[in-house]
Length: 355
Ligand SMILES: Cc1cc2nc3c(=O)[nH]c(=O)nc-3n(C[C@H](O)[C@H](O)[C@H](O)COP(=O)(O)OP(=O)(O)OC[C@H]3O[C@@H](n4cnc5c(N)ncnc54)[C@H](O)[C@@H]3O)c2cc1C
Image: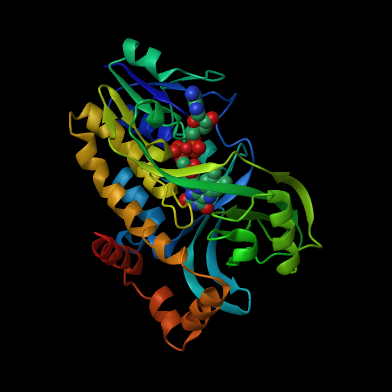
């Protein structure tokens, strides 16, 4: 069986790992010269989004045999609106390194590969590959192929600007800032690499204008962060959100963000993307229906995304009220420090109401 995988990101690498485990060595094509995002970053995997699965690192290990070492555990979340702050303690998730460093999740995953042939510096064309391989798994981390195949349903753009700042940070705490004046219905976030470096990112959605440099400096000023020194700043191309009408077209399977498996509330995708990579390999090699397998992943992504409709209605006054409500005695504990799966239960209810 000949399998080609496009993209050595989270979905592509986990797909290749599972192929090897099931006895097939795939060919993995990557357009960059090595694995990992070109910009170093820290992703946040919030536990509140994965309650039904339990501890997400344990779950990935047990369910998919993907053993990832985070760079840190998040033990405090600070939620900030223009006039309110909520600080929440407890096990709030993990910080995952991204990029080309040895600790990055991409580098970790690559080390599991033994027999997969990896072709770097290859901006592969899925159409050509689909003629020469039995199966092609598209894990390119963008919507290009799904659009080309006519199966992409657009849900809008997120404009991102950010950078690595140097300073004094709590390495176990992440801050999330909600303010329509610089983020629209998006948000900004501070996520630590360590106690001396952090990623500051602005994820702007639906703003009146997108002068990102200006919006980023408004963010830094309003949140008292303008004195921070930046090692460098990054301006990735706009991040498209959406979903696919089909996960498979002929011998082509879409996985990861190429299959729209990143929720559009905060843009969290890591664990779901990993699941889809493994499921693509299992479906092909075990002759199972990929769509049926991956629909469970999409259901979770859709549940989280359905909160976006509520967030889009908020103005700054609404954000203040939201944070005040979270601060109501007992509420914070119930939302953040129980095993109740608010995200999926709430999302399912919202989806039902929207029907
Ligand atoms: C700025 C930013 C912040 C994010 N923050 C978080 C977060 O905090 N938590 C979280 O869970 N998720 C986050 N995400 C979501 C993120 O998309 C997923 O975590 C994950 O990276 C998606 O994995 P993937 O394998 O689908 O794509 P990627 O990891 O992006 O990998 C795609 C790979 O395909 C390669 N490629 C593309 N086209 C071709 C081609 N034609 N031929 C060969 N190779 C190709 C690329 O070079 C890349 O290596 C964030 C995304 C962005 C952009």
